[in-house]
Image 1 (cartoon, one colour):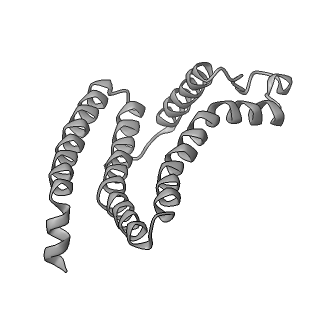
Image 2 (cartoon, one colour; image 1 turned 135 degrees about the horizontal axis):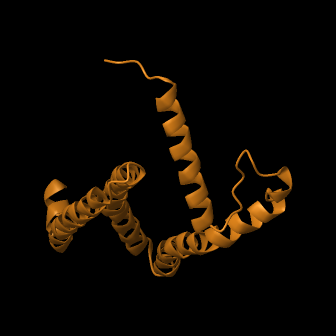
Length: 158
C-alpha cells in the first residue's frame, strides 16, 4: 500500500470544488470558492427561503399521507370499537409489513445510488435503480398475496 502524496490531495480538493460548484449551479445557489468575495455569499434568509420552497411539497405530502390513516380512524371510530380495533390492526400491519420494509429498501437504494453517482459511475446508478425496482416489486407482490389471505393467517395465529 502506498501513502498518498500532495498531488493526490490536490486532485481530490480540485474534484470536490468542481463538484460543489456543479451542485450549487444545479440548486441555483451562489457557490463560494476561495477566489470569490464574501459579498456573493447567500444570506441566512435567502438560504432559509430556498429550503422552505424546496421542502414544502415533501412536508405537505407527509402530512396528507398521515391524514389518510387519521381520517380512517376518525370515521370508523364513530361506528364501534370493534371496527376501530380492526382499522388499528390493519394500519399496524401495513406500517410494519409494507411501509417499514419498503422504506428500508429505498433507504438502501439511496445509499448505493449516491455512492455510485459520487464516483461518476452513472451506469451503476441505473443498474441499482432497476434492481431495486425489481426487488421492491417482488416484495410488494408477496405482500399483496399475504394481505389477500390475511384474515385466515391472523385467525390461524389466534
